[in-house]
Image (cartoon, rainbow, N blue to C red; front, side, top):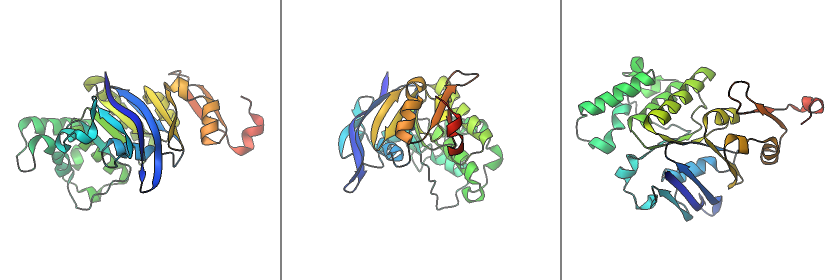
Length: 267
């Protein structure tokens, strides 16, 4: 079942158009990776899906309904967004931040129910945040903040989660545990995930579908095998790469080629 659709979406900032006629769809329970060079419109695309940035033309449909016609409360029960730049100006504790994620269901003034507390406890355990619950967000590293904000999204119990460079501040161990957790939610709760990923190999290993943006347009979308081909990547990224099957998964694995090695390589 298609859960999110982009139809001829254009968007930008002022007179400067970033996205040009974006067309693709995401099925329920699918993990879709958005890749592309810097400035290709990846973050702008997520902001349009999150209703942070209005489209200038075209439509984004959530279960066949234009997102602009959906109330904010209903929208917040369906879609959660984790931006790349976390801006929190008040020293909330982790416990307070996770509790706020239940506001679409409880309202601001109501106490949390037993179900709310159980959801928070489950996500806290999954994200290994129990020891941080009374710590303020200002007392945490960038990687720890990223884990907290993902936990807040999951406590929201969305059907779709939008992630902008979610592994940017994480070490290699937490990158994999972070994405493994998302895959478990995808499998166990049919969570649909739309994520901007700069690491092509993480996109290859974790995503069911990849959308490659180039200068604000969709260059190609499809399975990792269809998208991550060296001819396509070299054209879009303007660099030399090698692509071979991963020795365990068989998925495409992309190797960048330093300039001094280029004479030693053959496609």
